[in-house]
Length: 502
Image (cartoon, rainbow, N blue to C red; front, top):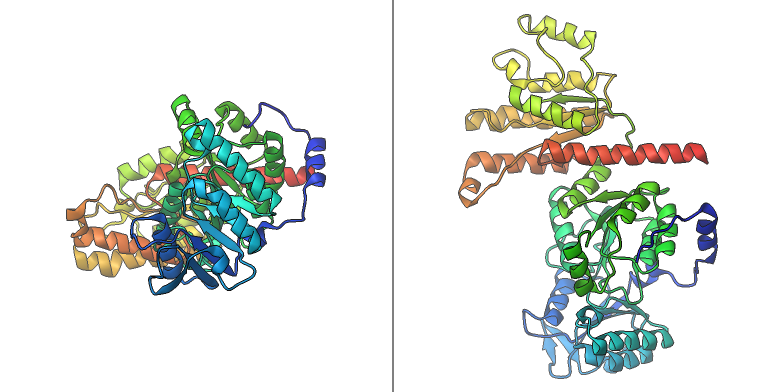
């Protein structure tokens, strides 16, 4: 449980000096051989699903299946027991068997020199029952005697695209800079899947469930030192050692952004956390205070978590708060300006040079134009969206450019596809190439099946896909764009101040 404590710099230094470097999680999370115990031909079973995950993602190591009643699954040979596998050293075992069989499985794992056992197996301490709680404790004690680390119980395990390890279907095979650890297996899969639609790719994601052995502190330390990870994301229901976790957090945030979604913030959520992963949720006020003190970013739901990794993946370190907004009609521009200002940003006036360029091209309206720039003012003029956004990229008094893609224009298909969409893409990419941070807002609304058949909505989806493919940060609303950008600016400002104190 995260305790209501203040951790001094002396305590952090003491914690760091006591950290053991004898065992590297990196070696555990990059196995050359995997055995699935409880592999099954039943397509809805965990044993079958994990087999599919590794086969379909092209696991690059050796894959062994274990089930005493089968001889073949998906064209792969099945062994009657773990000890029948013709390899003296197995790296990683995934347990898909009932809890009462795990102690015997660990005995076999010891004979095969297994170093990591992932317990997909559930119905242990999270049930709240004495018998199951005692069994989880016995499993951990036996594993420690045998020199085996436990991931879980009650978790989905490892997603490591570089190696072809996966805990869900059809996740991206490309690697990227975001790594993290989730107590919720379903939440981890949902996070990866939906963040991928926004262009995010991952180093590793670890689902760790009940955390009977490998816990959030050790995982935070691991991702802090992992060279493949540049941004750390986490879903945590509770921590077991408050001081150790804070010590790890104090070091992590000085090196990388750490974004935390805290589950179990209210009374009902705290009860669910206890039954979900047997976690003590802790006081939300303490969490907020600790994360703020040590520069971590706290988000309130999975959508905010996704928005935040999008911001840190595609936007550079920014400490300035001056924003220029372009795109959308008068009402949309006004609301966008309000949202960004309410999030703590400034909207300075356009420069004299910008207005002089406008005056040369559009005599009639050059003096109307303000920040935010109402795109409807330029309809029927010789100034294109591309010209406008490229001029914006040369403005020196702004830190961030916000480009709103307007979907409410009554434009026919040929103009949208041949003029509006290409201009928006080319101009936003041009701003990025000039080294200016660009935030794109593309609102898709609540689209049903009928709307998906419309060329306009499909064209907007294609537009978003192309923008994402160019490495641009895309958000579905001004509110979410401004919120994620504000948290990013707050983090880099904190980092800058921390460095000045060193």
